[in-house]
Length: 108
Image (tube, rainbow, N blue to C red; front, side, top):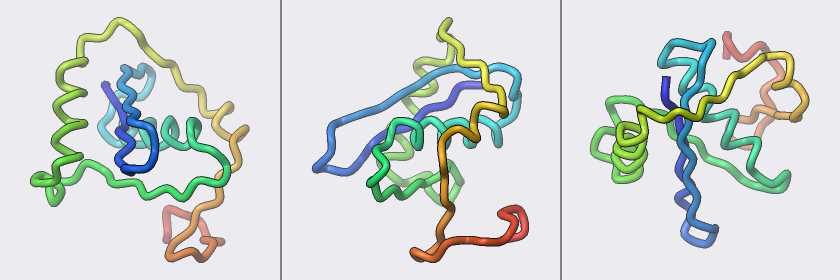
């Protein structure tokens, strides 16, 4: 699967990242990898809004841009292998409307 992210805030540096991942062959995991990668390169004091690739965003300029970049780079030879044991090294506090989510996220 190919995944990537695009930084769109006008006051921040122009940043995009595209890669292929293995061991996670599904669209859901490609989305999850893009989220994890974007969080890993963000500073601890960042305020981050993440938009995922749903049909309702099909007319969104940024969604179309990242989709085009991913399609252009689908045949990359560079691959990232994820092991879930390393994802816990980066502290992530899930929030909704600035309120910490303290329940199991799958049920949220």
